[in-house]
Image 1 (tube, one colour):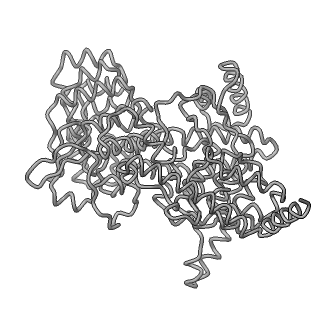
Image 2 (tube, rainbow, N blue to C red; image 1 turned 180 degrees about the vertical axis):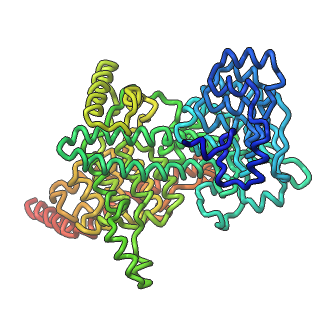
Amino acid sequence: MRHLLTDLRGNPIYVMSRAARLRTRFRHPHLPTLFYHVQNRAWNDVLLRAKSHPQEVTVQEDVSKNSPLHWACRLDPPVEVILALKKAARMVNAEGCTPLHIASSHLISEPALEALLECAAAQPAPTLHFDSYKSQHPTADLSRCGRAPIHYACLSFRGLALNAFQKLLEATLADGNVIVDDEYYSKRLLGLDDFFNEDEEAAVSPQQSFSSLEQPPGGRKKINAMTIRDASGQTPLGCLFKRYRERMKCVINTVDRLWREHADNPSKASLAAAISVHGELGELWQRARFILTRLTRERLNNEEGKGGEGDAHDEAKLYGGVLMDMNQPLSPGEIAVAKEAASWSAEQHNMAVWESAASLEREARDESPQRRDSSPKRFRIVHSSVGLIGYGCPPEMVRLAISIHPEQIKEMDEAGNLPIHIAATARSYLTTNCAGGNNDKSTLAAAAAAAVAASDEDSIVSEATGVLSFFSSATVAQTINAFDKVIKILLQHYPESAKIPQGKTGHLPLVMAVESGCRSWDDGIHTLLSAYPPALHNRKLVSLPLYANVLSMITDDNQSQSLYGGNSKKTSGVMSPRRATFRSPRKRANKSKRDKASRKLTTMFELLKVKPELLAATAGKRAGREAEA
């Protein structure tokens, strides 16, 4: 029946005029044989047809202007097919997309992508639709909407594999440079540091491109495709985060639904929720880590004039260890998330994400300006990202969320939690080592497959390989003390949050972390205690005889770290990389000593200010000893 509403070419006839239908009907509806071989994935026939009829390689469709190579890039072709169709490697379709644009948004192997890059680089550059742009490499070709292939790779969901995505990213950073007019450059506001902005009309000062290449003369600039904004104002990383935000809403809804449907079997619900989280967000997390690590390394190389070696150490030193080296070996069997983590995530975000219809009606009826201004958002990306740390979400995603929505770090959700309160109480059971090797991994994978199969959740795992991929090392990176890194990020952007109690219980973040038992000393307790030591006295967490021991742990030189909320000067944020780079070793050593001394004095002063009886008790004991002597 569907053919009754379409013509012989598959175009809907009910939206076309009579003249347009006649023109389409009398047009020859058939394509060359090479197109049908490609659509049927008959790769051997494609090779034979391309060799016997080479003129069909460059034939384009009448409407979409797709070539056979455009169709092949959607279907994961072998390397031999790409080499046989290489004459069309840089042809553009009606949307201005080359085959590389199509391949970047679909599943294609790394060898095939590498062959496509080589073939496209050997072909002449196409005529771009923007007069102000001129590209030399296929990774810098822009479509009609102003997107490079890396934009399509970041926008696609379950498109390129991680190794192919990394190959495209490296090729874009190396050769994906576009020559753009200086006037158009200032209008588009291209830059590296403003890719976090989602507002198309935001006034952002243009930044220097991180590419260290010489700028061409004549009022033109050479910029990299990673810094180019598309027609919607998004850079590649902005496109990736936009897709991440959309998928996170679906994930939270799925987790909440699973816990409602399987309330009688928490083990089944938690395992299915964990598989859903990693299946939906795992690759997006990895792509974001690839981009952030490479951009940071590129910027450090240009600012300091260093080579490729030692970059990971500089990143860890300048950014507090939040950015991790992607070349480190991943844990082979980092397994599932515990029941408490999935349950906590569902409980914390249920009210914030999916409000009831009655609540929406009450807000619609209330027309007061005060009500409209104070109405909380239904979805907070910062709170949600912090809540997913227990699932293996990298801390970089929290940094991205704060950069896009800095106001949310000071907002409380419906449960009265700031992001730091969520980080203090969230549970995580991600294993940092796998004792037992492949046997334990296979056993847990089999148990997971059985649990998911019994849950009748076909939408979560379609095949058994989906379950096994969740337990593989490609979805979860080895992150040690992830919550400690997240708490440091939150304190960098909002130091006063360590002193703000929870909205309903009135507990400080340190008290919540200790009472929940979810945080260890190295995974957040030390950072919270260093940020606000008087929180110890809030709920009598430490008895009077133990204050000296706790004080010695805080001010220990071996464990002392930079504070983010103390009273000492210049401790409210991280030092800029440029200032840290050009300071002499002697000045850095002297400043380190002064900071350590100020931390000790600040901690002692804060404790004595809250509990002055410590000083009176010490003076009384000393007077007693002197009297006895």
